[in-house]
Image: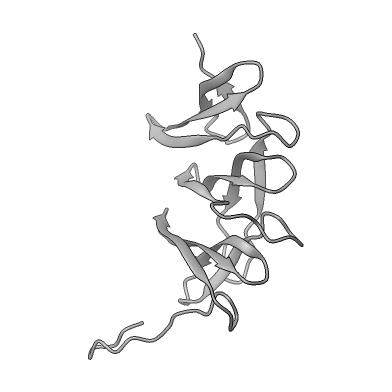
Length: 162
């Protein structure tokens, strides 16, 4: 943070004393999200809480360092943060996280749907809000790379092929 004399200090030591690498800083739904590499847990998603502290939001691949570019297309929709991520088991799929009620609460994150079952990637991307719906492209072994729509309740994705 910087004071009135423009003297700045570090806001957070994301790598806990080691070298960190900030990949992206994204404001979404009134929250500042930070994708960063941490020596211990790899590339993960952090957020700036109401007290000005940087907190871990999601460890997508617990026990193993996550790869680079793990979190993509951060989008706030229907009260949740949606993004594309690879948890090391399901491949790159769409995930959502609930906003915590307070800074002390943990975020609850879950995969929305495994569009490409198993370890294969559906690689969802191009998340776009339009007419109160969330649209995205994703790959499915049967359908190929298609346009999908997320149900406003965030429970099911639908292929929009005509």
